[in-house]
Amino acid sequence: MAAVQAGEKLEHWVEFSNLKPVPYLVDPDYSLPPLALSKQMRRRILFKLELLYGRLRAEQIWPELERLMKVFYAHKPLAVREWEKDFEPEARFSEKDVILITYGDLVQGDGKPPLQILASLAHRFLRGTINTIHILPFFPYSSDRGFAVMDFESVDPHLGKWEDIAAINKEFRLMFDGVINHASSKSRWFQEFLNSHPYYRDFFIQFSTKEAIPTHLLSLILRPRTSSLLTPFLGLEGEKYVWTTFGPDQVDLNYQSEKVLLKMVEILLYYVRRGADLIRLDAISYLWEEIGTRCVHLEQTHIIVRLFRDVLDCVAPYVALVTETNVPHGENIEYFGNGKNEAQMVYNFALPPLVLHTFYTGDCTRLRDWSATLEKVSDTATYLNFLDSHDGIGVLPAEDILPEAAIRFLCEKIVEHGGFISYRTDSEGKEKPYELNSTWFSALNNPKADESEELQVSRFIASRSIALALRGVPGIYFHGLLGSENNTQDVLITRVARSVNRHNIEERRLLEDLENPRSRISQITRRIVRLIRTRGQSRAFHPNGDQEIVQTSPQVFAIKRVSPDRTETVICVTNVTRDPQPVTVRGSLLPESPAAWEDMITGQVFHTESGDLSITMAPFGVLWIRPKRQGSDG
Image (tube, rainbow, N blue to C red):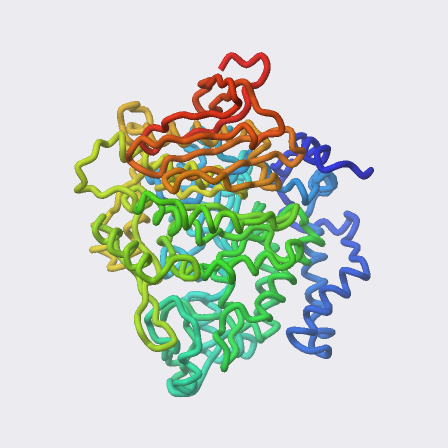
């Protein structure tokens, strides 16, 4: 392909279909041209294997890894190979990208598999608005709503079949979960480990006694839970104490065994064959354990992420890795690597607590100062900007940004609003807040407050506008798209705080609410959809575009977004308070001061003589303004 300028690449991406033309072959076709690995790529992968396992073991591992890649490639039909040739990594993401995060069974109906209901709802309501769906773990599981996987290669029959996943993939890109840090204690792998099967003997990390790790070394290990690190299990050879970072039913895999690494490469490639366009590496920071360290963010973990990246770049370059690391911001963004060799996307975990702090205090100073540090990573990597998820609102990512008193304040407000707090054990053995468990709507709005529903909806939409405007790709959890309130009943039943934000919805009831313009769900979804569609109309919101924080009063958050080719500029302004706020947007922010501004969201036009726009914003008001285009009526 001839060399082109950045702007031309983006134009080309508009013509390139995000969706694969045909599915992968069920059986490998060895009559097709085989995978041809370059010597350079072979050396790159082999070097990483040497760093992990030493030269001798690396040379023994390589033939099997190469075999897995070649078998995968034989499943790739010619149509996909041709389609892939037009793919350009620099234009992987655009202003049109928005990810919906959902469980496969959040919406349920009589007699229909939940995945088919999801497909129907997505076809009816999301096309043209959201182009990517992250289906949270849809595999058979024993606990933690899918994150204690019993079988990594099957669809939970309660949800549907692989054919239902494929049906969604016909209209939407898909993100799958790579729950590769641990497996269920009920999984066949772990049961064979307890049975002393030779192949699975070193799949998990075992000790002979609970005291095998000295207390002073145990205290070094960073964990997101308060449960015991080592859990006893009775097997063929007696009692074993096994490493369980997240709890007794989620048993950590041992990546010091090359068998585990190879198995996970095989599974990740299987996900690509089954339709994954993005793969979320769940809890990746805890992947490699080493006694005497914090057992988090170890160099071996980063090497494995780079290895996965190399493998995908060889056989499926359009597939992106997304890392999920609920840790302080500085550690979180390390998973970009140098911007070109690790994750193409990183969850922006510090954003939710900072936005929440902003709307609680009516002061965006902390958010504004932190946002100014969000520099462009590279042309091929960006942030996943989300406010809520299937878990809670992590406070650990903000510990290096907000003072301890501010985090305590967040916790107090969440409880006041009917939410819950989950804790972790720190290095001194003390319990510290780990995450706030609440829906995003309830986190922002006190159900006992003397406020109109209109004001609460406006507060909610204002917060959403910030995540949609920042550099990166926005992600919205299903309950966040609807503006759901806390479901404390499920917490009482399950005794799991995260259940407050994971409740299922009846399909009939949801459709009634969506079609009733007076319902809160209808009001919220229509306003979010309007923001998303507005965002997709301007390349100023492209992840590779520039971003500049605009200095205003602490009550107003404002950023300037500029398209990669610098032909479009949008100023995004949000009033973070319940009071009207005056704001002035300087014409000097643009190359030429405009005679008029227009709000992209409403179409309203503001005329000015000086080029500066001075207005009073409504409570929780949102403006996305740009110079009025010639010929635009507004």
